[in-house]
Length: 274
Image (cartoon, rainbow, N blue to C red):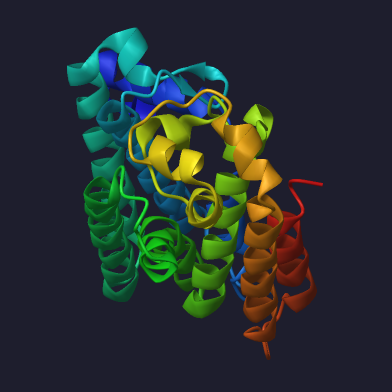
């Protein structure tokens, strides 16, 4: 699908595909589908293409040089080509789903895409603001991550609420790993959120107790800040919040045909740091 129109844009898209990833969103689509139904291949592809498009665009906006341990698309091909590739992936996602899916499915993916844009705008407004509330952070997680997880489940025929809750848990753990230096899991250079001034849960909790962390998040000196974040216990407290969201996700699965598999996925999302 990505290679259907050869050229620079297709090459950038192919690079993004080759970078790999956990493919959690299409996995959710498959696990949310009826057992005897035709596998939701197109739906899973569509949701992953949207995810890939957002990563390419986010890297341009953030000026991020590394994605999944590889050079970000814009650093290899230029911003214009990367933007076009992201747009191409968005278009390919909706074209494939419109050709095979229902109006309701297209609407669900469109709503998720709008939520992603709102979440990105919210992140821009919260940048370098250590006074960001935890509720505002969680709302951003629901928009930027939870919305597409929810759409993945809905496209398979399952519970959007399960996906939303798992997505929030996933994002919290990602933010913890960014503070603890786990590049393999996040695909980013450790400390990216702090350098970008992105207020994540561990940074916000630590900033409440440590003025050095608060100043760093606001745009001040960064040296030694991540060590101070860990010393406040903010990483452990953030993981407790993630575990709570995962538990709420599991509790929402009453009647799901693949409940055991979905529960295992929810557990795996929060166990990445262990």
